Length: 322
Image 1 (tube, rainbow, N blue to C red):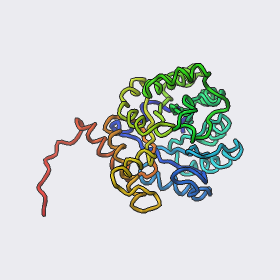
Image 2: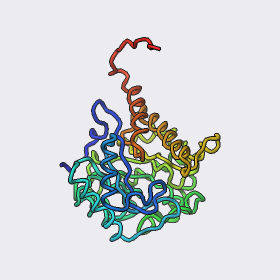
Image 3: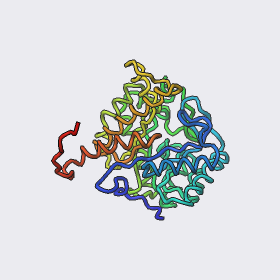
Image 4: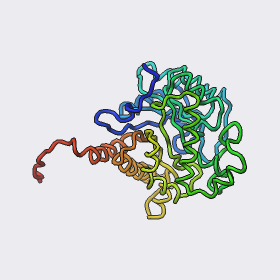
């Protein structure tokens, strides 16, 4: 199993969209917290995600949802390592470790992970970029609005990300004047520069617009509306919108059941999320981070089919039989 993650990997046969299955080994993640706390249950769910069509797994041991709390490095490592090792007993599927702590990343990469999904974009832990480079691993660099707008009403409900502030007071003041899509590009350019200076291979980098992290509903929608601007950075995009709060808000405003404790509300979130997957696949977004593979695979197949229409079979469709 190679550790090198090349850009060409992120769209498979005929440039099809990759679905990354979410596996949270936490008691408090916003959607599936507490479901996969034991190693056996977590590994079994990994098998289910792979069987359903996941082309990648994203494993996290610390929740970053609003209201969550930072856990120790030792506890985070203890949660994720046995699961990564368990998956490696039967699969060589690409695995990303969802952490901003370099110690956790190093341990996970040594256990068999391929990438680090850093929600601080290498700006939360000074050692992270060097760890990723030294192990020839891949990196997902996320735009983190909470870090650049810590006093924004949408940010104050989140935990603090990073071992120390990544920006000066003067920089933060300047950020307040930027529209959200410009702020995203400014943040990610700094992340990419840090990665390059540390020696991370350009072909091993993906970028994430940070949907749901300290953003207003409008800002989430604007970033999704302007994914083409993110593409101009020249890196594959890793997009996570599955079951995000702004989706539930849209459902609520339009009279649909949105409460995840209600069976219909739970399903509605996945169906609505999958519509964004269809849109993203049509636009050529390389990797989509999702909870439910089934709905998103249906959607991705439609989006891929439209985007790749030039390669479709020119089939004459028959009449309906009844």
